[in-house]
Amino acid sequence: MALSPRPTTPHDSNAAKGWLRSQKQRAGHLLSASVALGSLAGILLIAQAAILAYVSDQAMFQQQSLEPLNPWLWAMVALLLGRVLLKRVSNRLAFEGAARIKASLRRQLTEHLFQLGPQPNQRSAALSTLLNEGVEALEDYYARYLPAVAFSAMIPLAILAVVLPLDGLSGLIFLFTAPLIPFFMILIGTQAEALNQQRWQQLARLGNHFLDLIQGLTQLRLFNASRREADTVAQIADDYRRATMSVLKVAFLSSLALEFLATISIALVAVTIGFRLYYGQLDFGTGFLILLLAPEFYLPLRNMGTQYHARMAGVSAAESMLELLAQQPAEQGHQTLPDTAGQPPQISLDQVHYQYGEHQALSGLSLQFGPRGLHAIVGRSGAGKSTLLDLLLGFIQPDQGQLLINRTALQQLDIQHWRAQLSWVPQSPRLFFGSVADNLRLACPDASDAQLQQAARQAGADEFIQQLPQGYQTPLGESGATLSGGQRQRLALARALLKNAPVLILDEPSAHLDPHSEALVQAALADYARDHLVIVVAQRLHTIRQAEQIYLLHDGQLTEQGQHTTLLAQGGHYAHLLSGKSTPS
Image (tube, rainbow, N blue to C red; front, top):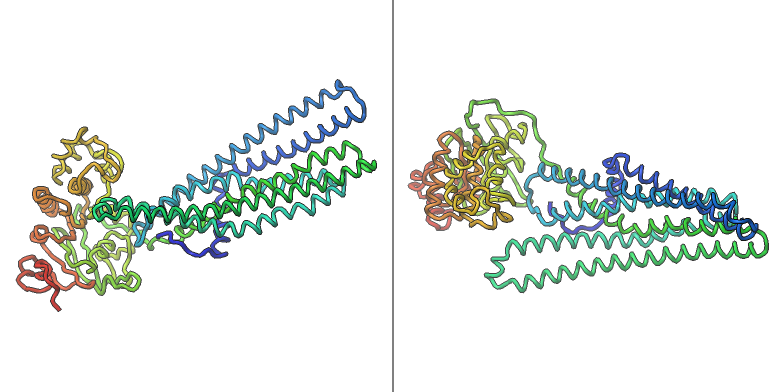
């Protein structure tokens, strides 16, 4: 799911443009109402220009007094105020519609991420950039660019409908010069769009690298590598600056070209009108009206060119969104497990194969857990332990074989129903910004304070929680920054115990724990395993000793299975793993 740099293809761009247009319906009728009001303001502009030309002609050339013209002057003021009001309401509706689209898209993308679950090579910073800056980039696309496109069609056509009957020559000049502006805009914008896509990819790269640097700051300081990494960030930031400046140079070139074409076109209309006024071939009122309308005829086209950068940013963001939405979660069934009166389910794997690219993570793995008790999974790094956990959690599906829950394939079960039967404690648990109680209640929102304390006592966390400044209401920093690694681990275990799910899955639960805390956790797991199924990936001997069944994985296969004393006496892979010796052939 990493948003890595990739070449932009016409297919990507065209698909993104079509997708962006289809998202307008999320705003309801707000964008249409905004365009209608803005177009009405353009019609009022034509009426205002007509009144101004008429009043000027009557006052200067027809020698009429101002008193009979006062109603026209008041009408012109009213039209001016009406235009201001309509433009203000039009802009407000456009931005409100864009806000609705942003909120809806952000919700859709977030829900899609939840459906996908954790993915290999997932880059949190790139996803964060997409959900924040990427979605925000669509505001100008919907609130500025799309209305500008509509106005560039409606207002010039309305002006052309007025000018052509009055003066065919000026109308023809309008008609033939107007297409030059969007032509050059598109011609220059094609290059700018490619540069903008490159800039967007470099922004994602910068975010990814910066997040990795922040998360590894301690290690960088210990290895005296912080200066080198700071130079790397500076280089990436400079690349992003250069890409941004390249886009701006093209944007300024586009604006210059559009302004030049519009100015030349207006000057051409003015010169032709001036000569005809001089030779008496055109009356002043008509000529003045056309001169007033000439800048307004080209203004929507120029505005569309000005907002073209919003289109480029929107299309670049949309391509990344489509890349994310194109990743479909594994097919899910709709069956639910029958009510077994609290009996944990039986979990078995039948000839399961799973491959990451060219790496065979699991190769014909067959084993059975349950229905209750503590079951340990051991093996060297790369043996397939993490892949097995991802299968159990429903994040991936077997390439071959089946994962069976009470003899029903996991693919046939409703994944949300299955995950409701699970509690999960990873090796590096995630705590969220909020209080201790808030983090615990993620597992059970309706839990009482007494239930929180009971779960914390079971996990050996109540003692240190009570010593915090505000106890269970103490705010935690980002990712539990105010706690030690062992405290975070015990808090995550308390959260899992609070859920009281039939199946508890843990990855190295003793990591970061001191001997006293480890003993408390082992006692809690042993007590929980009496009535539940506990599956733990472990390396520490204390965890392995008390397991009812130990499964040793080697190269994605189950090579040994049994209890600690039995496997140790065999002197095979398990014994060598505990002794730290190389694995026997």
